Length: 164
Image (cartoon, rainbow, N blue to C red; front, side, top):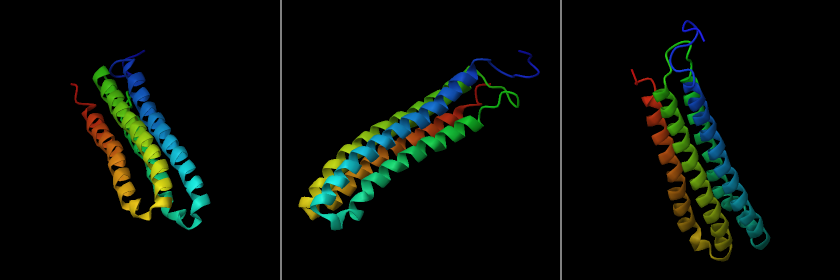
């Protein structure tokens, strides 16, 4: 490739784009698992106590937010990859890859936690309404795991472009 058309390492954008894809795919996998698992609990609980269905949608909403975290990082990464405008080196590609993996895998693990807690929590809430606040607190801590991944992902992606 001509250096007038491309600045930096030719293979570096591959790693950056894999990071963007990893952020979105893994976060959406966590969101899908959390939504499905807690949705089963909501459906089961709706048979026992239909008046509590709307109150029990909280885990489903919290799981859905995980996909948004992955989308944010994927957009940040993909806008940072423009080797024709500025040099893009392997350091930048690795920074974007690590950014995407940090956010994506944190979102996946948070989605698993939200799904399991949401399923058991809404079923338990149908039998004992005093458990609702405890379930919400556990869900908040599980969601915080994905938020930590988002923060680290933003910090890592901001390191791209500082290699030279």
